[in-house]
Length: 381
Image (cartoon, rainbow, N blue to C red; front, side):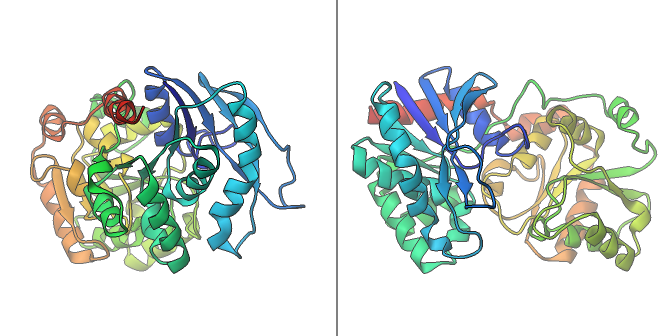
């Protein structure tokens, strides 16, 4: 079976962690199929002239990065059409020497809609994986129409959460063609480690209750709510934020909120961290917190559980599918400080055994996820 996977969000030399969850599923799937990756690059004259096509190997995967015309801030409802128009010549050229059996799109927008247009032209079945991006598209009627058409014609739809699957069905996707397959984890990296040793290696206090949030510093990750909740907790509780600036959020905005809430001394800004170091932060913590407003299948929750660290998370995306309560943490409403504070209190006051958290969560490896995905693809072929 030959698979051509598409994802605009995919690791590169500049940002090796960008779309790491997409890379991990594709890499695991490559053990079962002959697979290549197309990671289109948005291009606008004078802003990002660049090369037309860059082809290379990324950690064992063949990756091509053809560019497509992209208009910053305007005409956004045309992104998927520009995507298809820009990379169709490259796909046709590839098919002369390497004909894929399936086109595998990893986001509904622009990948899924763009790939649906390409598939219509070249007559190859396609599959769309639904992640949190669908909820963004729901705000734009034109994008909703385009997504609905792409989902209806897809040979299969893979959803990382039951909530996204329900949204796809409402848009007209065939229930019989939908499979809910949440993300997996890199079990070789995210596993139970000694808490004290991790704190020492990271320079974190050993006499504090530590909460960790692994997420960029953008507003929609709910950091402000966590900081406000922290002001109602004991002073021996500190919050470690692992992530870099994004979407208007940065160290300055975080610390301004911390000063306002009177908890600046309880905040540790660790910044973005190498992938293999993130696991140490989860293992060093008493609990992890993810207070996002929107998610697909948050890998931060899965990775925390794989490390045996309980989770407090807002009720978004696949959280209900992947976080068993009360066995591995608690789920709270989004954008509400009081329930978040009480949830953190409950988790911090509970005695947790890492092995029990891991057992309750039943976190799966990417290899297990790939087996399920490959089964979906086999039915199409």
